[in-house]
Image (tube, rainbow, N blue to C red; front, side, top):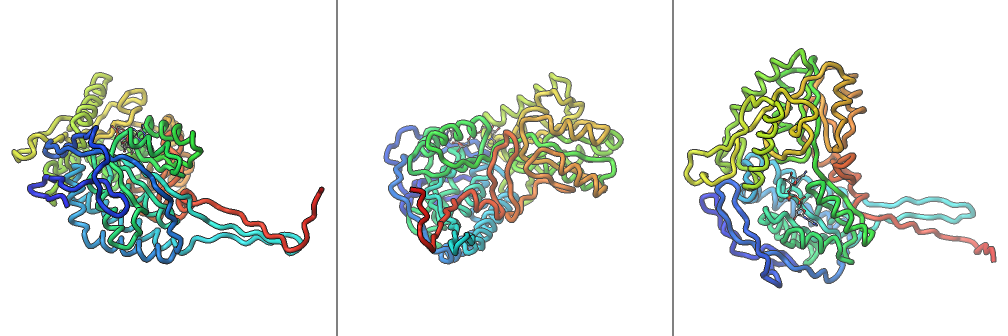
Length: 485
Ligand SMILES: NC(=O)C1=CN([C@@H]2O[C@H](COP(=O)(O)OP(=O)(O)OC[C@H]3O[C@@H](n4cnc5c(N)ncnc54)[C@H](O)[C@@H]3O)[C@@H](O)[C@H]2O)C=CC1
């Protein structure tokens, strides 16, 4: 186990998990440095080499369910420890990391419940003949994760995969290699057979090996749009099924008849979780002109009050961004916004905590931009940092049109007290999710996924079973064969 002291992880054990145990990579070339977001310290991590030896189909659904329930129980029992490692590796606040870990075990528990419900259909045909369908596993599924929710993404992908009887090889982001292997160990401890859930470390090279590997039947990917396109292209060569959870630039529409305090809280939830590094964030906040002054006053007041600093402290609500380049990229977006005419109402600057331990960390103050226009870079591109762009609108029709004027379509939101308007707006927004009078809550029972360039396929909810299984039709003749020949 990595030993945690003063918030730093010293990785002493191998981080690949293969055949039921932690293993060293076959080749030790291409070791990548991993930096701890809140201190800037680094430790070398070695990539994995990939050999998929065989497909193990874990065939008894009730046994799968029992083992998954046990895994969920163990995660619940160790939630503090796992959350702490996630904080050290990712930089998010401990409060959020605990929620991530809770969502992870809930997801595993939910799919454990569905494992025993997998069933086909019986269809009667003329002459006593009949057909039935069987829901079967795909085989080996590959999961490729992003760095913003390392443990949770590993659970979101592995839970439905295992519930359907598949094996999974999971590759976390090279920036957050630590917690996926903990999940692998917990699965093993819970009784998952060796080799059914493997973790392989590495970056683009390893990811591309997975997408090309002839024994991989499906690839589920979370990350940026350009990499998602590559994953789809590579998987197409082997006609592999693909689920893509990509980026977003989601709109949040706040109407003048809203409950303002909730709308402000919603806008903060839509922008500042995990230092703004969330794919479904509602970063284009459209506010009806009449309430703009009150909205801005309140949102700025609350943004300035966000406790920023040591992510391991209970009172902290915003930690460090994932890396120095990411911090620089986000600060670059803020200065570009200023050049294009936006006004910085608060934040948008590097932040150095008083604790000397955190001086090298990648912190910035959360930022609210006013005076934005739809054609500005900050309004068009996914920033992936704590930057909210606020834009005025006059009519519902106009707001919907502007909200939909994007190639993304992951999420959306609306705050209003008018029930008809709420559902009308939800119907007309081109996005995989619409939050009414809240934002960024993701219960495992409901499907999550994108429209347009934000991807396809879904995670969570019952429907995801369809993305991790295939349907076989069995046609049964009871009489003689009527041959045309
Ligand atoms: N919307 C979202 O959920 C996310 C968006 N991003 C955006 O992407 C930017 C870059 O971040 P990255 O971590 O580099 O994202 P990325 O999309 O390049 O990486 C995501 C995962 O794909 C893997 N990968 C990279 N190249 C690959 C390839 N050619 N074949 C197969 N797998 C590959 C990575 O190792 C990682 O595990 C961020 O600054 C952010 O704007 C990043 C992570 C999540």
